[in-house]
Length: 228
Image (cartoon, rainbow, N blue to C red; front, top):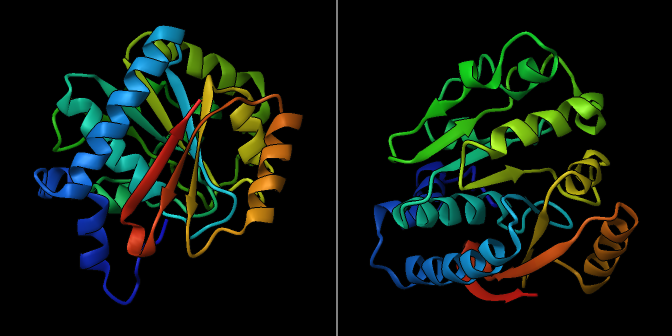
């Protein structure tokens, strides 16, 4: 997600730029993306959107959070699901506990209503990953995940899934196949053309639908978007 370990405070501020500096040019670009996405998804009825990238470092989580913030400021009720069991980070960025989460719901220990957390950003809720020391990767490809998404979709305007990178984690393809659409995050200085091609092929095999591509620039500043 481009989280800068050398300067975690600065990195976190970038992740929340649409909240901390809503009048910046980058925040405005996220609002524009949210508007385009709104008309695309509301017309088609797409509610469950997977946000992923070919490989890590493209600014995936930064983009997801800023899009989510832009959505709730547009009076949408939004749920973010952290399905990146390999490197969960949403709870850290949004200052949430991660003792229970998606893993526990899939294992049947809790209902999602009991573990979803309200953030300090009104309208934005999060289902964190849960304790990833207890692996449940295999559960992501089962009917349990499908049933969970079906239940969740009735309670929110949009559900954004933070998934691992497609070329680095097989479960990203499972999740993509269970989503209404995929937003692919790329980075001008990190993502290679051949990686995009491989990712597109992998998602096609999974019968997933790419509805848009976001191209980030250096330091995860927003550059361009393409929606289909």
